[in-house]
Image (cartoon, rainbow, N blue to C red; front, side, top):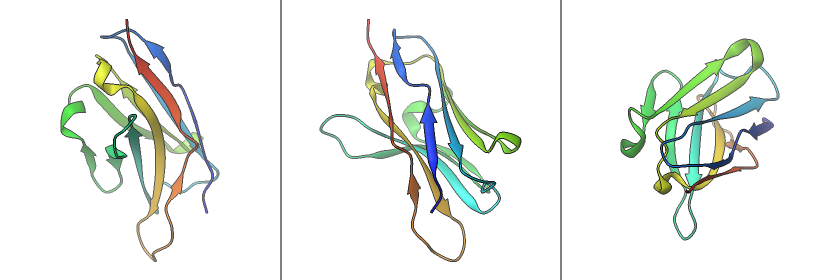
Length: 116
Protein backbone atom coordinates (compact mmCIF):
# COMPACT_ATOMS: atom_id res chain seq x y z
CA UNK A 1 0.00 0.00 0.00
CA UNK A 2 0.92 3.61 -0.52
CA UNK A 3 1.78 5.76 2.48
CA UNK A 4 0.14 9.19 2.48
CA UNK A 5 1.02 12.03 4.86
CA UNK A 6 -1.17 15.12 5.07
CA UNK A 7 -0.51 18.57 6.42
CA UNK A 8 -1.91 22.07 6.29
CA UNK A 9 -5.11 22.00 8.31
CA UNK A 10 -6.00 24.52 10.97
CA UNK A 11 -8.38 27.20 12.16
CA UNK A 12 -9.39 29.93 9.72
CA UNK A 13 -12.03 32.63 9.67
CA UNK A 14 -14.90 32.53 7.16
CA UNK A 15 -13.72 33.85 3.82
CA UNK A 16 -10.14 32.78 4.49
CA UNK A 17 -7.89 30.32 2.70
CA UNK A 18 -5.91 27.19 3.51
CA UNK A 19 -3.79 24.84 1.45
CA UNK A 20 -3.69 21.15 2.28
CA UNK A 21 -0.80 18.92 1.19
CA UNK A 22 -0.62 15.16 0.80
CA UNK A 23 2.78 13.58 0.16
CA UNK A 24 2.92 10.05 -1.20
CA UNK A 25 5.64 7.50 -0.45
CA UNK A 26 6.56 7.17 -4.13
CA UNK A 27 5.84 8.29 -7.68
CA UNK A 28 2.30 7.03 -8.00
CA UNK A 29 0.34 9.74 -9.77
CA UNK A 30 0.49 8.09 -13.20
CA UNK A 31 -1.17 4.92 -11.92
CA UNK A 32 -3.45 6.18 -9.14
CA UNK A 33 -6.46 8.46 -9.05
CA UNK A 34 -5.88 10.86 -6.20
CA UNK A 35 -8.58 12.51 -4.18
CA UNK A 36 -9.54 14.59 -1.19
CA UNK A 37 -12.40 13.55 1.07
CA UNK A 38 -13.87 15.12 4.16
CA UNK A 39 -15.97 14.01 7.09
CA UNK A 40 -17.87 16.39 9.34
CA UNK A 41 -19.17 15.31 12.77
CA UNK A 42 -22.26 13.14 12.41
CA UNK A 43 -21.96 12.97 8.63
CA UNK A 44 -20.69 10.44 6.13
CA UNK A 45 -17.34 10.88 4.45
CA UNK A 46 -17.74 12.62 1.10
CA UNK A 47 -15.43 13.15 -1.83
CA UNK A 48 -14.45 16.79 -2.27
CA UNK A 49 -12.25 16.58 -5.36
CA UNK A 50 -10.36 14.03 -7.41
CA UNK A 51 -7.66 14.11 -10.09
CA UNK A 52 -6.65 11.39 -12.48
CA UNK A 53 -7.55 11.30 -16.14
CA UNK A 54 -10.05 14.05 -15.28
CA UNK A 55 -10.63 16.49 -12.45
CA UNK A 56 -13.89 16.49 -10.52
CA UNK A 57 -15.25 18.63 -7.69
CA UNK A 58 -18.13 18.25 -5.30
CA UNK A 59 -20.78 20.83 -6.20
CA UNK A 60 -20.46 22.98 -3.07
CA UNK A 61 -16.71 23.57 -3.55
CA UNK A 62 -16.63 24.29 -7.28
CA UNK A 63 -15.00 27.62 -7.95
CA UNK A 64 -13.54 27.79 -4.43
CA UNK A 65 -11.27 24.73 -4.19
CA UNK A 66 -8.52 23.66 -6.57
CA UNK A 67 -6.85 20.24 -6.62
CA UNK A 68 -3.38 19.88 -8.13
CA UNK A 69 -0.34 17.61 -8.31
CA UNK A 70 3.40 18.25 -8.09
CA UNK A 71 4.98 15.16 -9.64
CA UNK A 72 8.50 16.19 -8.68
CA UNK A 73 7.52 16.29 -5.01
CA UNK A 74 5.05 13.37 -5.08
CA UNK A 75 2.61 15.80 -3.48
CA UNK A 76 -1.05 16.57 -4.04
CA UNK A 77 -2.56 19.87 -2.95
CA UNK A 78 -6.00 21.22 -2.18
CA UNK A 79 -6.14 25.00 -2.30
CA UNK A 80 -9.24 26.12 -0.44
CA UNK A 81 -10.44 29.69 -0.85
CA UNK A 82 -13.50 31.56 0.43
CA UNK A 83 -13.90 29.01 3.18
CA UNK A 84 -17.28 28.66 4.85
CA UNK A 85 -18.26 27.20 8.26
CA UNK A 86 -19.85 24.30 6.35
CA UNK A 87 -16.37 23.32 5.16
CA UNK A 88 -15.40 22.39 8.71
CA UNK A 89 -14.39 18.72 8.73
CA UNK A 90 -11.51 16.30 8.91
CA UNK A 91 -9.96 16.15 5.45
CA UNK A 92 -8.39 12.93 4.14
CA UNK A 93 -6.31 12.25 1.07
CA UNK A 94 -6.92 9.08 -0.89
CA UNK A 95 -5.04 7.09 -3.52
CA UNK A 96 -7.05 4.64 -5.63
CA UNK A 97 -5.35 2.28 -8.10
CA UNK A 98 -6.58 2.87 -11.64
CA UNK A 99 -5.93 -0.66 -12.88
CA UNK A 100 -5.41 -4.11 -11.42
CA UNK A 101 -7.66 -3.61 -8.41
CA UNK A 102 -6.13 -3.33 -4.99
CA UNK A 103 -7.17 -1.44 -1.92
CA UNK A 104 -7.32 2.31 -1.59
CA UNK A 105 -4.82 4.07 0.64
CA UNK A 106 -5.76 6.86 3.07
CA UNK A 107 -3.93 9.57 4.91
CA UNK A 108 -4.33 10.10 8.64
CA UNK A 109 -6.61 13.12 8.23
CA UNK A 110 -6.16 16.80 9.02
CA UNK A 111 -8.69 19.01 10.82
CA UNK A 112 -10.01 22.11 9.08
CA UNK A 113 -12.12 24.44 11.23
CA UNK A 114 -13.79 27.51 9.77
CA UNK A 115 -15.04 29.78 12.52
CA UNK A 116 -15.01 33.39 13.61
